[in-house]
Length: 76
Image 1: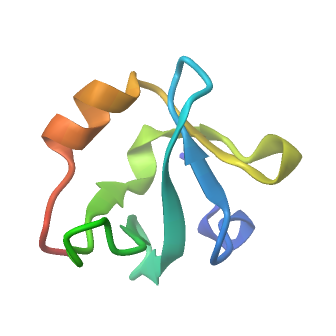
Image 2 (image 1 turned 180 degrees about the vertical axis):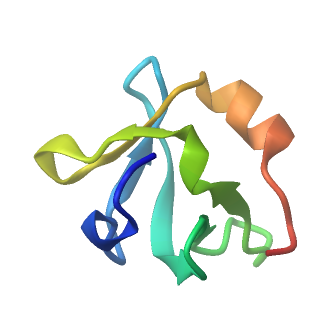
């Protein structure tokens, strides 16, 4: 599991295909990342377990963006 301290606000979140699909708002507890609001004003949450790296100032996850957006949560 990644070290949550490496994840900072405003970091881009990129999928396994290197496309950005979100931006970090902040860490919500020790194992959940809160994402900034989408176009509809809704926050989403992804588990820290999805993160495979934080290289080059980006949070990279282990799945395609479409899949991530189907699986993310609207509650922490």
